[in-house]
Length: 345
Image 1: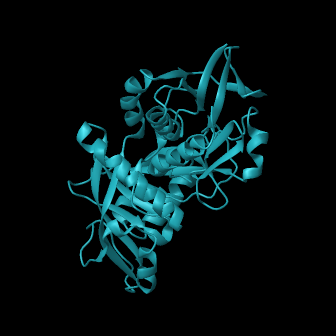
Image 2: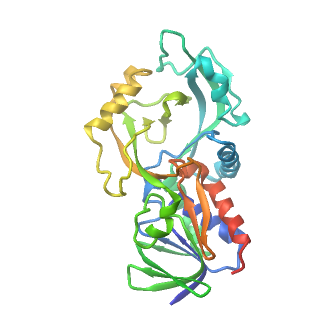
């Protein structure tokens, strides 16, 4: 039986950042990272990887600020980051209230100009604000960039499903799909949308977290250099110029709940129709170029704030990132480290 001080279950962006921070905080600890697929191949693979300095609450805004600062040094390190100008579309009657959801670093100012592909309603009820602090990342590529360094300090185990978590004195025995068992003093559960796994389903049921389908469509039109990220705040949607892939991406809010990873299926006609209907209000030319996209899912908490909590003395849950796993992963990891520092192991 392998024995670890800390075992992290889930190798998406949240688990990967937690692993990075754990070995910084505890360089002498034995640490393992267990992923049922390849690291980054779950929801992180499908993620748009968009960051903008926003939060629905003071706590989430503080988490967004922490993550914003965390990612900045990687820009000069050859990481797959792409900085973007940012514009915000919202109602004229409440634009100041809307801006209160964003960090001061966004620096929003009212603007007379905007993305020439975007059209506002003729009644003059909307305004455009220009800001800064946005980027997108290839999340899967970022995790792959980190993996070689992680492997020098972390036992990375891919393609293995956790079949059971058995409490033991001083920790847990983690049963794996290859019939091996790994012991750990502290287990950090970062499963993304895989909430229904028998190994932990009952342990997290009381958290009230649900899984929602996420749809992002691709627009077969190449963005111009300098094209901005456009946030349609009142619609909870955004339009991203994916320069690295040569197309636009449009993400809108889908309300299909209690889905399972692997069962969301491919894009449906209704997904494309919903995206076209919404985008047609603002960018009819782009709406007509929607042809394909991506479907995945993520875990959403009742409060719409990430959940980082101790389930017992040896088990921590970190998730429910509400579609913002990439954007908030560094702050989630910081909260995990805080919980670990309160426990001797």
